Length: 469
Image (cartoon, rainbow, N blue to C red; front, side, top):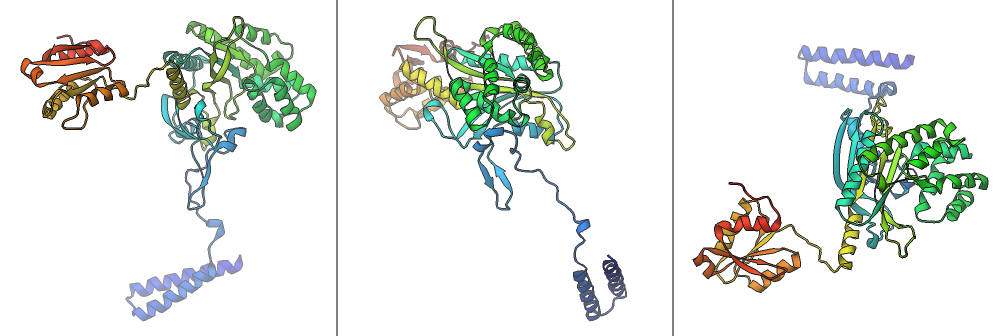
């Protein structure tokens, strides 16, 4: 330390000498000689490790430790500077990071974007490595279960309007699960891994789950049996009330809080008129580590083959839950922002809709176009352009083929393939008569409509609001 202090003093004195020579306008050779001495002294001194400056920046590897056993499905990468990077696994973690970085305390939002999973794809079941999700989230401090109930209402509303068949939303609470594991004798260190095993009950039998917990994860058989007594139960609010009277579960503080919130949630779901779509299912675990309270998952149901059989789940199409601690993981001061949200699997929905349409031998519409502007003879491109412009200005979704002189048959075939319901046909005679021939693609019925009445007629046929003049 003494040697360094002496060197620092020499550097200081030499620096003052160089500055003095510059002020005196000494010769360039002398200044250059003294600067060389100063640089030599600084080189001997070296850097002061205790005074190093650190560049603070947002960390890029934010996904680690958020997904539990699902972390193995994250695409890990490295950038050219050697920093750890990952492809986005879901939209929830980036949302929490956004809230923390912008110091937001409440927001309601939806978000549609791509996510990536290092998984075995199954195209027929809508399972991909790159796919779209649609998320809806509510962040902020609110009274219990009101935002949660709204999220479930939105989920049911979306799935009902898509008309993809009967569905059921399974609901549970991570606090109930943790309380159940505790009273059954699961060691704290095994909570998450046992949680992951339980979550497989919708795909495999209880015996297979038990074998995994005992054989692979080292859980005592009697502990697994106690878990089995709980996780094979499902029902409605009556099951919640039954478990509130359970002599062991009701004595666990976490489980009791979860059960009380679920009872309140069912009251709100009844008021929203969706309680018949909700099932309290103790086997629902949701493997993601960031969930802290209510969790839910929507599954499509297969119609029973015989009367009396229970409907079978044919796959998850939406899921979500409460994640109150995630924002605090990104906030420098650990500021917590309670959040709840849901995620819809877009490709999964699309694959189901496509399968249903194929079974019904219906074609998938690939466009929202309501009418194709066509011509019956050659040299009518200018007239087609005028008409399509009129329709666009009137708010009608119209298009035309990008050919000067397309054949009428090709234009009609295009409409059939794309699912366009109407064709507005211009011909030389129609131009003379001041009419447009409007053709229904499915029925092939054609009627002459006065040009000034065409917009209202198309709106009437396509269900658009009519203009009140």
